[in-house]
Image (tube, rainbow, N blue to C red; front, side, top):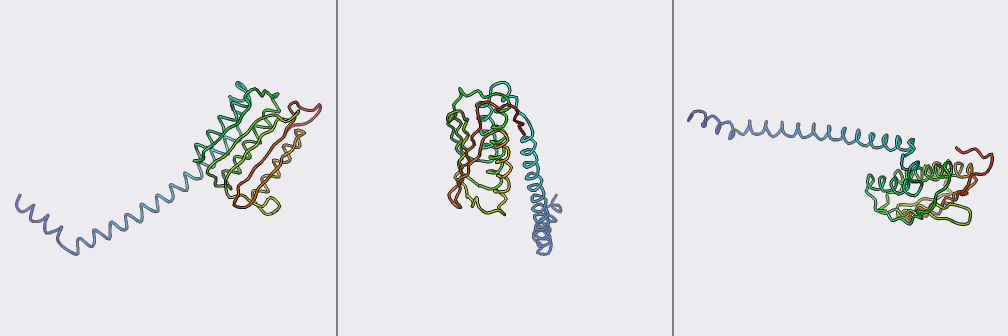
Length: 200
């Protein structure tokens, strides 16, 4: 036992052994940090893929409980995932027909996807109400904002597709954004589909 203790003390006090142990620790630390970096990248990709998958799904809530409930659920889920605060003003009495509801919901998904990718907000405000015969969706964020007139902006490219989707439903999409001051996207869609109109 005495010999074992003596050997242990000798090993721990040997400067060369101690140096090697520290060097090995640094190497292991560097390896662990590299592995953590890989894991973080994989997690980021998985998060992006999950978000894209969700974009393709029609939620059961939309079919069973209507647009207001589905919109609230989706916005809350996205905000929780992204770490935003949210504020809602939603008219729960709105019950648009199936394709109208789905168009508005899809536009909300696309807008929030753009917010996730580009805005870096702390808070997002969602309004769903009626303006005449139009259902109005407003999504406002307090993020970085952008110049809507800049054609090379990734955000502007994404918004072009949203303009097309709104127009296909007989509606329109309006954007108000300033660099550093956040973005407001307003969607107006007729509460009933126009005869013969093809939704996308």
